[in-house]
Image 1 (cartoon, helix red, strand yellow):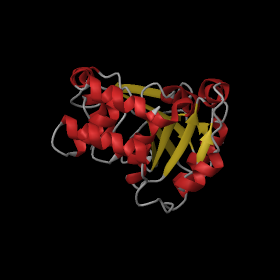
Image 2 (cartoon, helix red, strand yellow; image 1 turned 30 degrees about the vertical axis):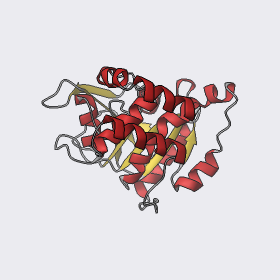
Image 3 (cartoon, helix red, strand yellow; image 1 turned 60 degrees about the horizontal axis):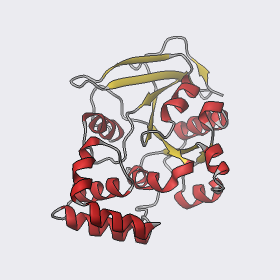
Length: 250
């Protein structure tokens, strides 16, 4: 198991792990379960975005700094928070070490909403661990996710867990420690979204404007009902095609 180091400090870290996920995926609950009270909160330089870092000691030697990134639905950012998340995950911020491992915190009770962001994380081709959080809610809704099959399909570790009850936290710690020390696994070159979802994203993208990655991201965010304020006006403008697309995806 990982044990808490007495003095959290980013500067002396030997490993950096980034927690990333959609808003309301339980990411911060997982962060608290991993780091306890050994946390530091500051701002990223130049923006009023919280920088939350906790430190753990790895049983394999050295330290692990865990960074709780702002929640986002996409690596194509639309807000300062999302810009920070995208830059940290891509290793583009000089104030934060590039992550050695990314932990994708996924809401198991609402898996389709998380798939687009997860596909983007896979395309980064960095060591990745999936924390399949809120498994208890998924079970109550009659959803059964085969974590082993998902891990084989994506070629990354998948850890079912219930963060607020600390279920699966030890398994996640072990998966993080192993990923920090192991070579990069053979990630798939690309991971396709379901055909019906891809088709609706393409149709909405065309309605939004010229074909760009931003249009594709906006279309997906609308389909998953991203509550961000900047999506509201776009959603109102495309109310009819958006409603039709959601109905076809039910």
